[in-house]
Amino acid sequence: MTEDGAVLVVDAGSASLHVSVLDRAGTVVRTHDLSAPDELAELVPRLPPVTAVGHRLVHGGPELTAPVRVDDTVRAGLDAAARLAPLHVPPALAALDAARTALPDLPHVVCLDTAFHAELPAAARSYPLPHGWDTRYGLRRYGFHGLSYAWALRQTAALLHRPADDLQVVLAHLGGGCSACAVRDGHSVDTTMGFTPLEGLAMSRRSGSVDPGLLLWLQTEHGLSAAELADALQHRSGLLGLSGSSDDTRDLVRARTRGDRAAELALAVFTHRVRAGVAAMAASLDRLDAVVFTGEIGTDQPEVRVEVSAGLRVLGLPRTLSGPAEPVEPTIVSPTGARVPVLVVPTGEIQQIAIETRTALAHR
Image (cartoon, rainbow, N blue to C red; front, side, top):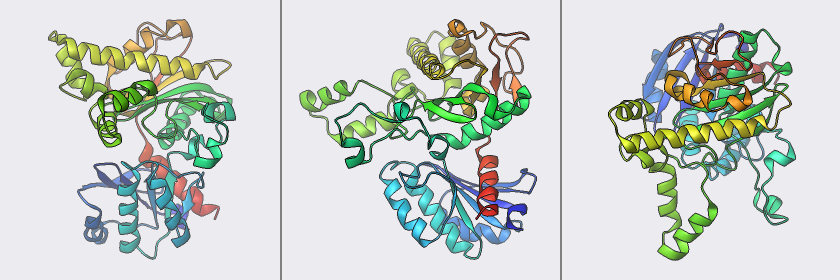
């Protein structure tokens, strides 16, 4: 059956294209980094046999709320989502089109980062804007990093030996993009990213949330255009903007030890915003069963984890963390007996896409 065979996963980012083959056990058996979608045609004959193709799509728009097999009708509807996430969706659609051309006889499934948050409660998904704007303009908080969160929740449940639908946890995906999410009984009930992946925590190059009045002031008092603001907020802010030197926390930790004040400020702002985001997410829960770090920074930057945890003792997180600095498997890094366990789960978006692709085809 299709859902039991190997799956080709196509993960197109704003400036990257990763292609992986996962066997029926979910093990990555081949991986390739491509520079352009048209290279897929050349690569496909050299891949092991696959029976389905799964695609990561950052934004599914208002219509798609679950993984779906792509036909011409679905594909046409995806263009609307491109306007909501212009950095991420157009490259993914280009890769989708190239893969459908190269493998026309296989089923293709799009797996959405927004799907995990599709059932956010009204209070969490709604913006306090003029009455009627939500329906007129399609405004709502979508949330992102859903594939990462779905995988992290699965691994957290296994590590804590508890069913996912009995957990209340805060998950923090820290990487190039950063967000936090509150999960109650297996469902997302709040998240820091909103209508676009620009809202919320400070990120590597994205600003995260800033005062909207500040942006209006820059437009009206200093004449900055929407394009100039978009470029600054998306590409020249966050860790890079604050430090003036790097968007990589590893560089900034080293620079901080050398006395670089700008690097010190960048890390201080970053960890402050993460702590604030985690605390805000905890406010949507009845209890806090665990805090989970994932994403590249969450996994391989122990200094960030320690500084976030140490600043959240009010929530019961420990002052110190133990365990390996860069875990390769899901790991509890809090001391034994900690009131709130702290976990690190290496990113598993590729594996989650393969799971969702098989599930979508099994229930078609």
